[in-house]
Image (cartoon, rainbow, N blue to C red; front, side, top):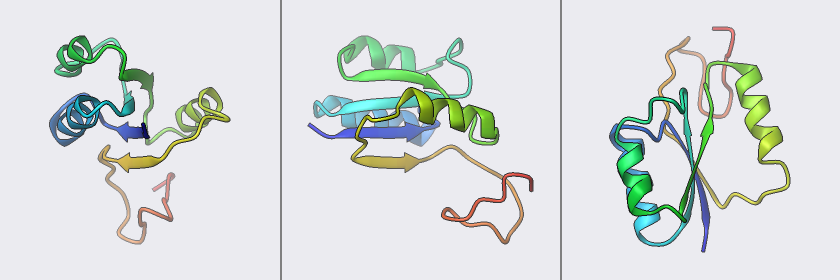
Length: 101
């Protein structure tokens, strides 16, 4: 059973992906900016309580990224879906993020 990490998992495409992967019995690490406001994710979690775990992650905050990396240290992740939206300079890419920009 693969482990899938999905950023921006509380609504839209991220929520649909979380539901699809949990529905096929994959383990889902769902990340959201604010775990106190899970929007549609709470209903999906109720349907698949053993498949989904939620972690705080703000993809625009280096400290938040480092904190998540520390919490998940040593855990294998089979698939990363970086769904959370980021606006920034045109020169950045998914492999070379300009966090200050």
